[in-house]
Image 1 (cartoon, one colour):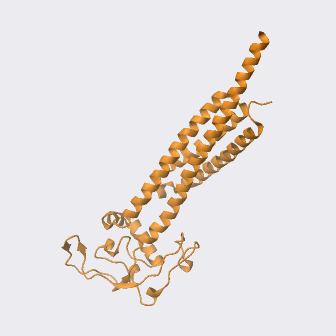
Image 2 (cartoon, rainbow, N blue to C red):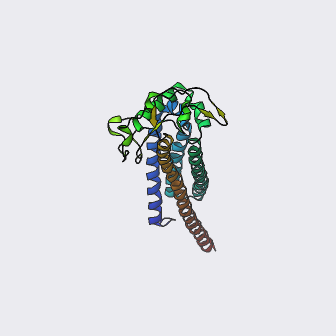
Image 3 (cartoon, rainbow, N blue to C red):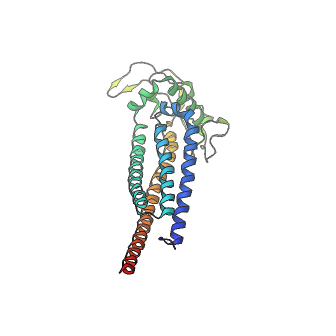
Length: 274
């Protein structure tokens, strides 16, 4: 007869096997994502090194859990329980960081002073130009993001300005390239500004570009897409934190069962020698 309850031990090993498989899949995904690591870094995405660290950690800790459940050794259970505590704290920290990042992204997309340095890069300008054509919007925070040179992709005609918006998870039909979460509401036209404003000073320069531009900025659509991904990350991190807490509680229960069994065995041996 084992030291740990048979059902509890099998359940513990089963879940660790499942997480070991998840860790293997994460490593496979990290290998496949290596080719896109430079593109991710270019747009300010997280380093792929963190993905490797997380994937290897999940696989390694799961293998340790399988060994601890199979061997029924106190030391292995102690080490596994320690990793559960550390993992739970790390997942909670990452979850909180994701929430803070979400609020920072929302504020940044509404601030033209933060957006303008990004638009100095030609690749970012081309990306926004393509997005404006597909989503029917102009600028990120506002049209002033483009300064005194509004691109033709901001041009709005009376026919296109009366749409009722796009919807669903399937993207944007014939426009392609910008599938995303939810729908982006209807858009209207407005005349381009005659002069540009920089805080309290006025640009006495005519603004070049189409006479009629899209009323909505692209920041709302960008945040809608980013917010969807960040919500998935929040669920992922907090979900792993809860899983680590449950793993810790089960490990503590198994540890006490092993310790009680060993204590009972030691007392029995003492009685026999007596």
